Length: 312
Image 1 (tube, rainbow, N blue to C red):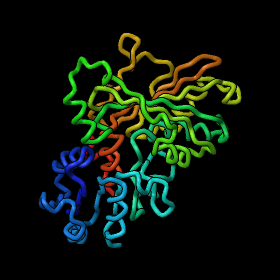
Image 2: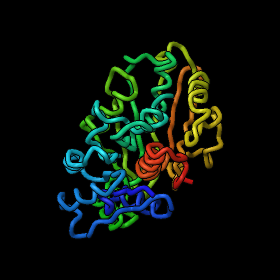
Image 3: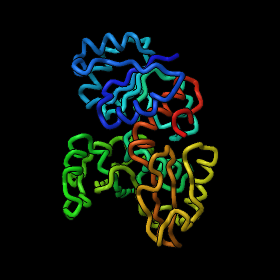
């Protein structure tokens, strides 16, 4: 049995994690009294019992906890605190062909952000294969369910009447300095910070990432070339599904529903376009593949177990 402590179990990601891990017979989920959840000394005592700690905390609290956790205990940090830190391994197994091995041998893994995952898995293969130059200027739009905003946003949206049109979709990050942008640049291999504009919508969970390009930005490569690049890269991946080129398979009456991958750890990658225009889409569940499921996948890799355990 492996002792696992979810520090921050009462948060959105922590609750999703606890629910999924509680069903497993190979793990013991360590608990802390409710009134000690914010007591670092009490939490430190639990760290000493754990084989692996998953931090589901605000950034500052996660950074403080990481300083206290002893060397014998492995750590997965679901916060933003260490995602670009050189001493932490970035926990996106599909990022490169060697990333999974790095995670397997790591002591400290930083779980990726929900938005960056789709962006990275679309952009990085194009740069690595030479279709896209690292200095190309990139633009990305995203749509997410409101669960990604944490307890405050969840409470606000759930108390708002569903006929309040102002709450149906809200664009944010308009200072063009969203906290995920640095992570998106560094781990994509790009030399530039992308323009990233997210939108939060009135559905609970689900996410799409969209990137538009001109073939002239890809040295004349067209949409089918991009699709073939992604298909080659992810053909052996368990959770990444490259949809057939320009397929209507994921559409309903010509519309793409952001919640189509909900309750799964799957990410669907799609390419649409023509001779001049290319449009890339990633669709996944922001709470599973985007957060808790990603942490479970990393946990399985770090423990040398099948990546699919707890994610079927």
